[in-house]
Image (tube, rainbow, N blue to C red):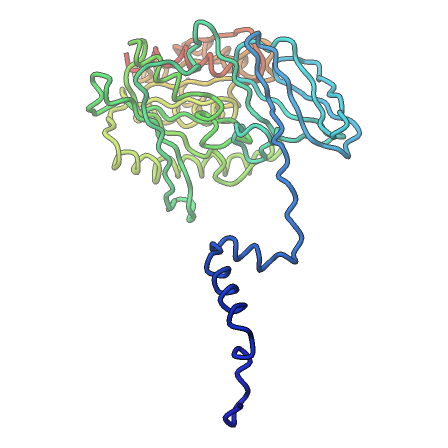
Amino acid sequence: MTDGLRPHLTYALPMKICCTALLLLFALTPGTQAQVASSAEARPASVPTPVLSPEIKDDHSVTFRLKAPNAKTVTLRGQWDKNPLPLTRAEDGIWSGTFPTVPPGVWEYSFDVDGLYLLDPGNPAIKPSREPRSSILHIPSSPPAAWDFQDVPHGTVHQHTYFSKALGRPRELVVYTPSRHIPNTAGPLPLLVLQHGSGDNQQTWVTHGKAHWILDNLIASGKARPMIVVMLDGHPLGRTSPQDPNRRAAALDAFRRELFEDALPLVETEYPVSKEPSSRAIAGLSMGGGQALSIGLSHLDRFAWVGAFSAGPADEKVTATLLADVASTNAKLRLLWIGCGVDDRALLRNEAFVTQLKAGGIEHEWHATPGAHTWPLWRTYLADFLPRLFQ
């Protein structure tokens, strides 16, 4: 019967078949129902086996691997060895090679794939920079070095995003605070402004420089005073060319304004820091060292401690001002610490600056040490510099 409407076809099916179909339908889980519904679709490809790289052995041998089936040549360039390591290709397209021994330290490395430098996709430890191309390999020392993790009270690394009134756009900075389990951390605490080099950013001193562990270890051992450290992005106008002095001067002025108008007020609001010049320091490496010299030495009413590691050149006007009143400079400046590696490309300009200081009678410390323009040297300098502060 149709009762004037479309026939009810369901009633045309045998009752036994209907019941069986319903039971099967309700017996399926939602996930199984979805699989049944998509049974006509192709099965997904199997998940590839992860490539283990780097693989660190107890004897400090390290094996690196990279899956690049279409590459013609792959080499590994590690900061610990001047000679690149050629990698060998297996049938599955995985290239591999082993360094028999990698010395203890925090090292940078990259794959060179047919002339293109790549990060190690198997290693989440990446050196922060404006153009990330280096992975990080950390081989701890025995006994532990100042930059190795140690079982001591650990401080906290804070990240702040703020609107810079000086620059008119959002910016970021990083702040280190010591562990509350260390005595004498209730505040007010001394403050160190610590700056990175050209191409890096506000996170590099922590992620790659291990500044937070250096501070933890030195403070826990009583070698350094508890302090708060602020690290800014030192590229307020982006990267600038050394061949463009006008742009460099504008970038330095923009950094100075951001530091004084935005960063320091933020830190003073959020953290128990002292505002006394005797409790404030500024230091940096390479470009950041030039920023520390130019800003710190021209504002001795704000900073009594200045550190420069393989520093870029200071503003010539700053040097002239220091030499114009040597007595006042030496009375305000508690420490001017300058260090540079003897194989560093910045050695000559640092020696020229030190010669000016000596001739003018400006009190300072000069450290010419083995090393080049690299992070292994700057970690050592920070570990040497921190115990001198705020004493």
